[in-house]
Image (spheres, rainbow, N blue to C red):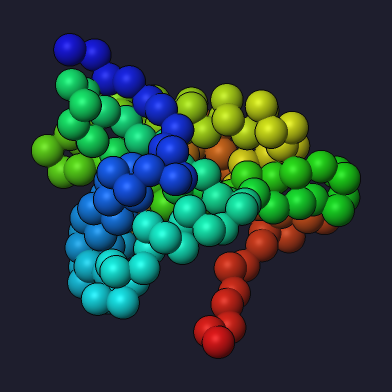
Length: 158
């Protein structure tokens, strides 16, 4: 059977469970930190996703079996005066890797971003994630820069 990609239904408990399972699988992978979701995040992620109005997620499935996920967050570009989409998590189950599923999910993110009027899709990637970096480059992603200076990812935990 072929792989299909669909947007998760935020109100569906079954789709929330798919989101939690795939994100937890990603968090257990070395590129996701290798530890899995905390018990609190595991228990609250589905409902938090459903309650957050600027998130959406796409799932790749074969015969109704989830294979991968793209979790996205809407943002806004002041310079373009238009929405943006941040591809926050992209994950494909280990057994499904190497089958073009990541590429299919990224194409679906582009289409979903265009439907939302987004001017760009952004993402972050670990420097040592060569598989991910190769995929992103093949999909047309470049380092973010302004005035010839690359952006640095920074955070402040609250």
